[in-house]
Length: 264
Image 1 (cartoon, rainbow, N blue to C red):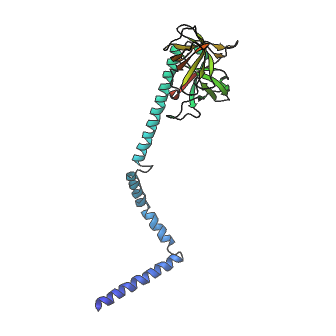
Image 2 (tube, rainbow, N blue to C red; image 1 turned 30 degrees about the vertical axis):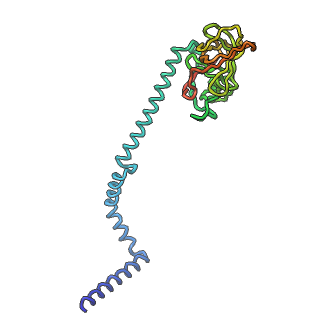
Image 3 (cartoon, one colour; image 1 turned 45 degrees about the vertical axis):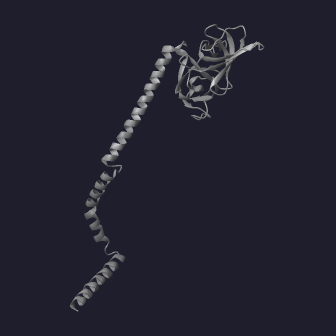
């Protein structure tokens, strides 16, 4: 009986205490004491948050800083590899090309419209140089001694190149071995079609096909002796006036990152 009375007394005490606290809080009498209490425990709260943030990998933790440093190192490594590749392309170009270096403008390939890796082949490339850099429609574009294509559109900052395998590309050519002339056209895929070679002319598979030269009086256009590719098949029928052939470019257009515009 005595235990029951004690329990009732304790219960009534806490009930009355709760009512008093609620009343004081409602009328704002506890705002000042609460603010004092918050200020007193705030250093402890900050320390607790910092410790938790450290172990949880927050942005201000050591782990977060290490992650940021790792990202920067990866970025520097990527930029370093890109610069190394560009410098290598420049060195290779000026060491191998027969074109005067003063006329060459390095350009980065920044796009390949309608190209889907593993599905389709590039037919055109977008480079990061335009009329501001004196790039003009008709300029030849090369990589080392290989013809990539020619500029077909150009605005202030960018230009479009139709590559040699594009169905819109054609130029006069010759065999490097016999100088036999002909015309070459892109087949819209990954090959070039050699045509208009006389039956009497000597051409064979494995012959290297070069540009014959298609420049105007100002020097604009496609220079001679640029490589278009290797002859892989010859079709020679006595009933036809001309021989035909298939040519494969020595370039992998999908992997070109730097090319060179020939300006005049």
